[in-house]
Length: 221
Image 1 (cartoon, rainbow, N blue to C red):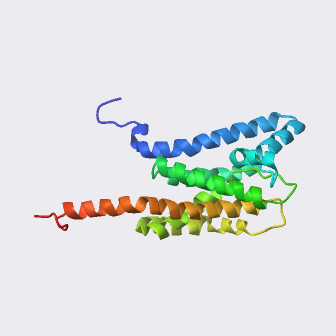
Image 2: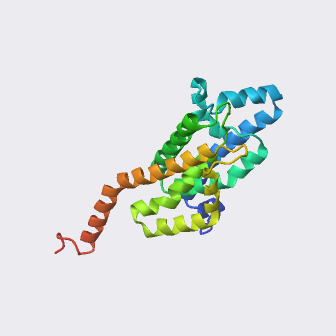
Image 3: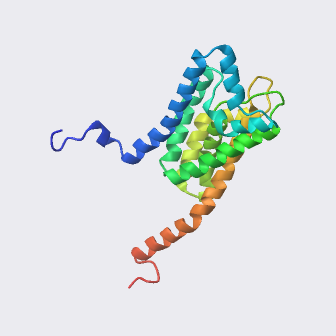
């Protein structure tokens, strides 16, 4: 590479690259699982779904709390989750790995356990929709708790673009787990509240340090 010329990779900030790679890696696993499902006999696919899905109020169905987001009913189901999963995952990950992990764990577990406790009997729930709803709920509401202007603006923009999906938290007659959507969204709200509380003291401390450095604090000469 000639001096003074940046590669295409250098034009993308490292933080953005990582923010794309992490949710992208989750999606790679989902697509590989779907590919396996596509080539398996119907009986094998059904067995995989029953093993990895959430079976409400069945002890062996608890495995699905962890594994169900990686399994989808068909390619259309997976395609529908792909873009929002990548976009919301990127926006979450760009704020740092610690925040991504904390929010994702809360959303993942609350969505899964809520579905296990309240889901329709004799059903098997699969798909990443609960995580998608939770991530969106977090991104939309976090600014309310942090009182950060730009996070509020981002929340409004996301709500304007994707807010209609929240109708999915209401009971419906089709074969869609509204419970996963509902509890995923609740998980996002819980995460927004808890993460903002955890970041609060650090944010106030940083603000105080900045005020002193600009000559407004009590330590100014």
